[in-house]
Length: 133
Image (tube, rainbow, N blue to C red):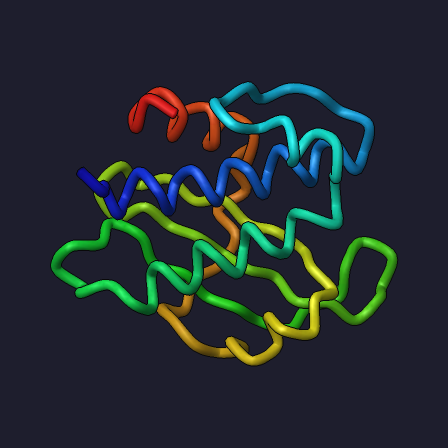
């Protein structure tokens, strides 16, 4: 049986795994993460878009996840977007900087939120445990 929230969590955690792999880090471990670890940054944006698409296509009553996309410079001052994901049930937030043009289409959509300053890897690990990924 398809579990919407588990699938969204999986895409978010795969995006974090790909982001880490792009930095040469291998911290998270979840089923089906080999492509994310091999492809790194090039897969991160695809996983973010998949998660956003699932959230947008779901009924609000079924989905524990919300997202928000805002333009914001990265740590080097380059123009980028930040995608925030938030699990309303577990109060877990994970955010990503991205330069992906396709994500620009989602700018200022979703539920406005700000960075909660918690570690995204730790939050992904919580999602991995909660959803048995």
